[in-house]
Length: 467
Image 1 (cartoon, helix red, strand yellow):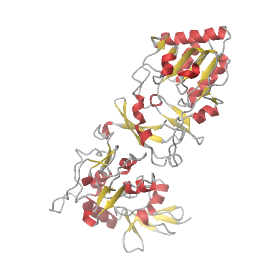
Image 2 (cartoon, helix red, strand yellow):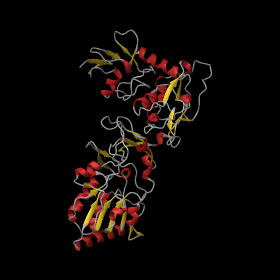
Image 3 (tube, helix red, strand yellow):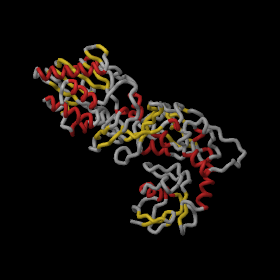
Image 4 (cartoon, helix red, strand yellow):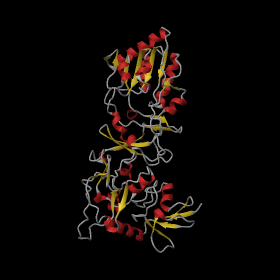
């Protein structure tokens, strides 16, 4: 492996990588070694168009761009020399000739790389007197993305993303030189299952999502690490919250799971946390307090036990591993067989989207639960987490105790229905389709009285007199 020196510190690095790639591999980029860049992205091909990542290499007369310069044994790289700093200032002055300094009204303010680098390397005043070139404002590129053309610095990240990740290629740069513009290809629109990732990788606020645009300033939010629950991939996400409300999901980099992307469906699923919720406990068709509903559920469990009736368990592939384990243990204490579960299925692709539309089917299988969509048959009591099985499957079940997050036909059918916390309202872990156990943290507190499935099960067991 070649050895190189960066700012006089020697590192052993993989062969065949570029300077920026090895800085990223070593975790030094932006974490001790500053090599500003716009067009380079760790998961896209090299473009070399922004010229901001220039570094000085001993023995090489001209400055070189770090994104496209392979490392070589004995290479000595300088990222802080006077020549490098002067080059950065020159590039920033060029980029700011046409880019408006509209940070007070720009939705990217607070997380804009141009804003950051202009602060670090920008010149104090413009030396040009010519008017800025005219450009389009607030252009709809498709159902999800809005384009402010005057902010675009032509880094081409969005162009490469559409060509290389979803391979739809809706965007391109037309014309040459000062006439260059980012445009949609005629007759097309930006409408692929991953379209909103272009807003994440746009470094300057030219591309913003229609969903988050002008909702809230980012400095009023903080990001909590979580895991998407819309399919068995388990994409790593950040949930931006403020005032106990989730405003958006962003992809969180994990090269073993989702690189730096998430699909649009998963991104927009944050809205499900607050819509269609099961907001109040019910017992025997009437709204009840949580205490009274738990007491009624305990009575049903005790009655089934005393009558030596049949008790069945139905688990949810949306529940966490801890909740599933608590369910398994309670069923064992009741003398019931292993829980059944059902997994919703849909379309998949070769990028991230998987056919199993639940985050923890692998966790159910690992705990010995049995996948089945068949009728439950005659039973005195069904203990149920979630509603992935239709109400018709419970046709011959006398009583249903349901712990669920959302309203459904099954919650209307249940003898007792107890609200549960969503994955954004509790901490836990999911096991994804590759067997990787990934933890997530509580993002918000529920605005209703709701408990995790394991806590609700413990209360029911106590009410039934089960140790």
